[in-house]
Image 1: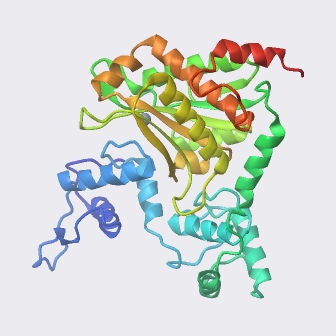
Image 2: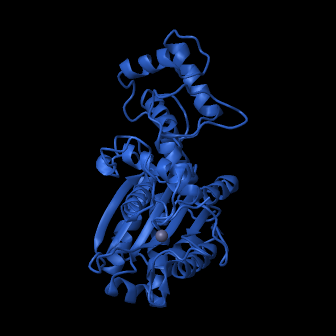
Image 3: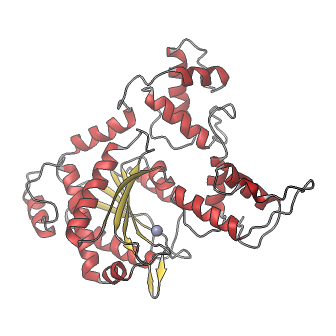
Length: 385
Ligand SMILES: [Zn+2]
């Protein structure tokens, strides 16, 4: 299924209704006299709203409603309390209401794993635990009574979010050496979706090249670096996440460049999993911070900061994950640097050093931006097994 500008019909009406409910499309778009249903047209205004929605969700911002945008729109229609929620083995329920339930349970100290908006067995287990503790029928079904109880309770433990404490524990126990650690490098976009394009420069190819540079350096330190796609493929974000989950990766690094209609937008930003209201992957945030500081110090590019997001790629990966937006391809200065292979080496080394800093638990005498790849390699190979 694909809807784009110019299309007409009930599916377009459905998309428009959802965007209207989300406040992305003005509610006054209908003529007042219309008793009969007006023909829904995918117009410029709707395309603009689709783009805004895609941007908010970390989807490819193309203004076209393809399968992943359609899925995200469907999920966004549900708010907690709209419907009963339960674990259905054959086709798990997904939606923003499931995400809100998971977040609430986490806040209350129940281990739902990473909130992903999918009602799976772990969510059911956590919900039963909650129901048992509060003297309710532990049926694992989130209906009106459970909803009321969830709304009334104050968070039991602040910061006691088991899945993220487990991530921290794993990094602490992993030791400072890079050898043996498994990293999935995710070059953004791919075949058929070139990402940001400016002149002859395209994000998909540049990030593929950066991924290979990073992969080579990681392999030299004894790390196991895996790529989420080949040079001529373009899996969906959920499939990239599944690949990393199946590989049991320790970390996930997604490589992108940004683009903006304004040629002045420039700089580096990093993103980690977090809802913006307290639920955050602490390890993801720490790694994003290390990467951000190393890259800004090494490149002198504008510091656009580190931000929590619930994008699919950050939500569905079950390990600390960071998405790097390494400059704006739409900015002449950033673009010129990204096109320079030596600059891409600088990026690769900065990212690798940041990963090393994470496993050193931030204890390193080298000031940010000065730890070289050769120094890192020397120390890595000299370290006792
Ligand atoms: Zn991108």
